[in-house]
Image (cartoon, rainbow over all chains, first blue to last red):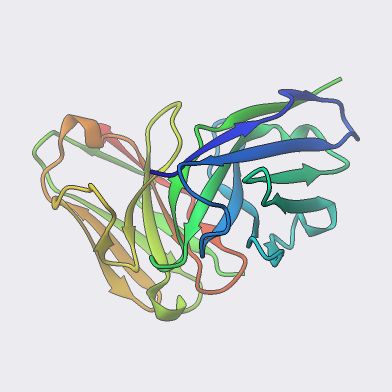
Length: 120
Length: 108
């Protein structure tokens, strides 16, 4: 079964760029699904950040769009997120998730999440 | 952007009781692209319901979803100890995909 694993620095300086990668195992990133990033600030709810299809099509949250870059590497079977000009408000647990196109685009597989703190 | 409002914010119930959670959208959710997730502390969310009423793989039948348009409901027929958690609804019919603010189901 498909599993997802996030990786990346746990600490990013203000005004810097947050960079995360999500490794896909047990399946191919070229399957007919979208791949997404969701975040959760401490003690708060979930916020959808962006999504990508293996062909390169992307969508992102308008509130973050100017700072978000999402990409896919088919050879490594992973996808990545970059969030620029970070502030303390970007401190959160970041999850990657599969968006299942056969299940009304619901997020049926999630990574365990990785905590990113923005601090000097 | 479609805003999802969940109610109540907190539900205090005992094991064995029935839980009814509401999710109301600011505009119609197209084609019932509405999902429900459960999240326990320190864990990633888990998909319970997709397409407003279809149970995800491995989800027990005490969980059921209903509704259409702007009003959706998640029902847990008899709460088990492992069901006490935070529940989120999410729509994907109109980008950006948005989540409700969550309903916490706590032990009374």
